[in-house]
Length: 320
Ligand code: UT7
Image (cartoon, rainbow, N blue to C red; front, side, top):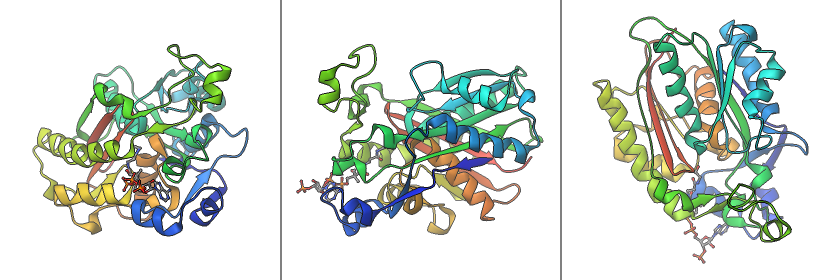
């Protein structure tokens, strides 16, 4: 695995000078204390490539050995070519098929399930999956209801065959397309192409109904985790390490209460990075592992939710 975040740290104190907010409001409502913000000119593929290099090194895999690269993102460098193509070029992964995957903050877990299935089928042996987003570039920095929530980052993993009984045990992916309007970037696509009016109207920024996403998140995190556990004959009691999407500490707490997961099994780093969208789950997984919290044969549950509205959960038995 690998991760990358920009150098620049934006604290709640910094935000107090930009919009009408307080450290107290942000901390109590979200758990976030600071987030990383990409430099001008720093794009999703830059962070994705850094995270990918670290993952390849850790896995002992050369870029040319990769069969497939999936980049989960909602902030591609540009509409096309896919950001995965740019990452392929940067890595020199010339033998890899590539595509981007748009499932919001659930993207990395979506990519993991797809990667595992292509490996299981025998089609591919080594798949690089990356969750990377630079939401700061599509954030309205005058809108206090969204600008305090997000940060930039990337997380990557090399997925390959493992010993029998280990690896991805089960996953549950889904979406409620009819609720998609609760979290959108309205303009810049084929429905409403970019124009002076769309720019002046702030239509290239994140538009979100926070309360609706909140309710969806709390409900769906419990439901999808239970579904994925049931598929492999486990229950929430079997989870050793729980890695939830790092959007809001209150959402994480509420979901864990519903699932009956004890605090000490839950990994949280939302205070340090905010919501990094598709990068959130892999960064949390990376840090949990490197902090020594995940051991061989542990049952690790990943769960995400996001734009779509999508959800995704995965149950892993840790080990090579
Ligand atoms: O990855 C998926 C992405 N999305 C999410 O995860 C978002 C999920 N939703 C949430 O995390 C929460 O809904 C928020 C953190 C966005 C908002 O928390 P909330 O407890 O639902 O607050 P609210 O939207 O109900 O707003 C409460 C009050 C409002 O004032 P009034 O109308 O009660 O006077 C807001 O105007 O807080 C106000 N407010 C703020 N005050 C200070 C909203 N943002 C701020 C702010 N600072 N930054």
